[in-house]
Length: 100
Image (cartoon, rainbow, N blue to C red):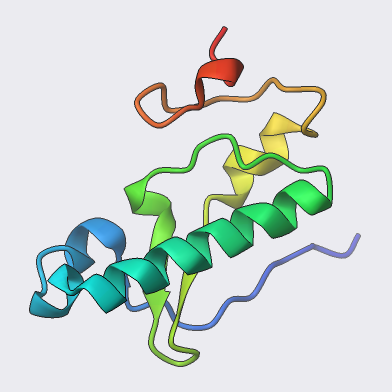
């Protein structure tokens, strides 16, 4: 059979590493991070998918497109749809309504 794959741009660093950089402390940089993360989540939710494991290590900066990328596809793929729930979640970052 044919193997499925998702190809992303080269990712430069994750959010925990970014926070250690001087640029990671500016107000504008933080607002860009929030905008990119919320846009990514809104797009997933509009398609009926739930990431299920949004946490700092799943947010990666991509210099090529000057944008944050939300990764962890295996986490939301296991989670199913917004109405079905399920999957594995990091309790520290899970929304209250999804904790069993």
